[in-house]
Image (cartoon, rainbow, N blue to C red):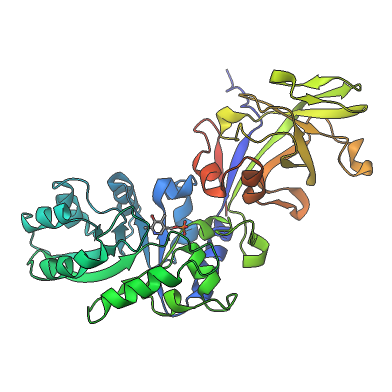
Length: 381
Ligand SMILES: *Cc1c(COP(=O)(O)O)cnc(C)c1O
C-alpha cells in the first residue's frame, strides 16, 4: 500500500533568507559579535532546520537546556548562552559539561554557583534589571552581585547585560541605557544590550536614534529580525529593514462557493455576502497554528495575489475572498489554487507575517512560534 497523500498544507523554512537576515544584523553592528537567539525552537522554525542559515553567528542564545544539548549535537562548538541562566543547581553540571555560558539574574543563582564543583570556571552574563522588572538585579544590588561573582573560583569572565522593555518605541532605550552606563561605570567585562529592535533602530545605517546601545555593545542579541519579522511593526515593515521572510505557510483551495447577497460564511455566520461573490475554502485552520482571532479582512495571497479572508477561521479550514482578486485572476482561481498564509508566494510575491499578526491582534513572534506540529515542514536551501 502506498502512503496516503497528506493535506496540501506545508511550511517552508528558507535557509538563504535566514543567512541574509543575519547579514543585516552584521551590517547594523559591524564591530559587535552576534548572538543568534534561537529560543522557542528557533522561534518555531526548528533549531536543526534554522542552524544551517544561522551558522555564521558568533554564538547562539536560548534558555532551554535541552535545546542547548541539541545545538551541541549539531556539533556547534562555539558559545551558547542561557538567557535565563540555570533553573536549579544541578543545571550547572550540564553547563560545565557542555561549556554553556549562563545569565546570572538573582542571588540564588550565585549561591548555587558558590557550591558548584567544577574544574573549568564558568563565563557568566550578569543581568541588570533596567526597568522591565522581569529578570535581573536592581541597580543598587548589581555591583554587589558583580563583586560576589568576581570572588568565586567557579567564575571566569563576567559580562554585563540588560534587556530593553521599549526598544521598539522612539527614545525607548534612553533611560535604561543611561541607568546601565551609570551603574556599569568602572566594572570590567563585555557588554550585551541590544535586541533586534535596538539593533535595527539604533545601529549602523539606522534611523539616526541614539546609537548608544549598539555602539557600546560587544554582543548584540538578534532574535526576531533573523526570522523576517519587523521588531517595530507597524512603524516599520520588513521591507524598510531589508529583511526577508524565513517561514512560509502555504496550502491550497480544496473547495469554492458562489454566494448570493445575504449568504453567510462559517461558524457564527459572522460574514454576510453584500453582493454576489465567489469564495475559496483553504486547507488551513487554527489547528495548524493560524490565528483564530484573525477576522474577516486578514490579508492572504491566492496564486500570489493579495486578497482577504472572510468569516471565522475554523479548526482545519478558512475562507478567502476570490472576488477581491484582480479581475483577470478571479476567474482562474479555484480548486487547487495556491494559498499563501504568510511568507513567500509564487512569482516573487510576499505576505509579511507581521501583516497577518496585526490583523489578529498579535505579533509575528507569536504566529511563528505557534506553527503546529501537524504541519509538515520543508527546508529550502
Ligand atoms: C528573546 C530575547 C532577545 C531577542 O529579542 P528579539 O526581540 O527577538 O530580538 C534578546 N534578549 C533576551 C534576554 C531575550 O529574552
